[in-house]
Length: 113
Length: 109
Image 1 (cartoon, chains in turn yellow, purple):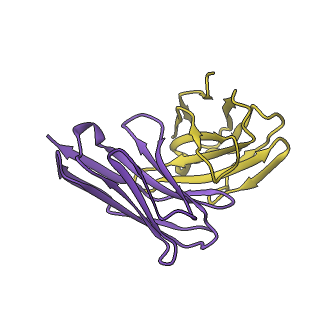
Image 2 (cartoon, one colour; image 1 turned 90 degrees about the vertical axis):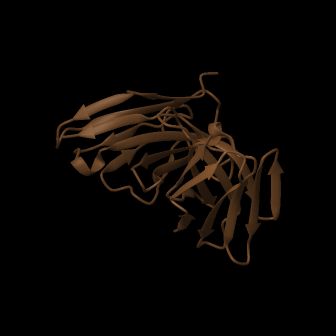
């Protein structure tokens, strides 16, 4: 199993550009989530999904959209990138929900200039 | 939503000493409390977790304690080694998982 994969590994955007961060898992996990990691602020939850077709907001959802059309994929869309969205983004999945071990992807380092 | 506070933000110990990291949470409904270790440039990985119906759990040199009444939980690492140097995150979960800000642990040889 590849586990949780994320693409791209690195990305530089200009302010106002849009892009999609890809996340996929091959463990048949129902629960998937997106976090951003900023120095001194830990991991902050952006959006999560408890299964295909179901998504919900976390603590910092503004500026981001998600959808979950399949169990395997959970893409994160930045609609109009801002410098405040410069961060490392981690996708995670779990086989039984938020109250179980989260398996993290390798992360995407995003810089918005 | 849940709010998790973690202390200290940095911790430096001598090899062989013990290290303790403490977290508090706000939502009494939280029922799962994991600890993750993140090495530089790597993804977070689970090292130990505890559920709300358990007061203490141990795995070799690592232990976690939970006080539900006070809404705090702690990570204890004994006989620290240089390879324990990393950033450690606590988290609390009910409907979603919220993380503390992290503790950078440095173990000096």
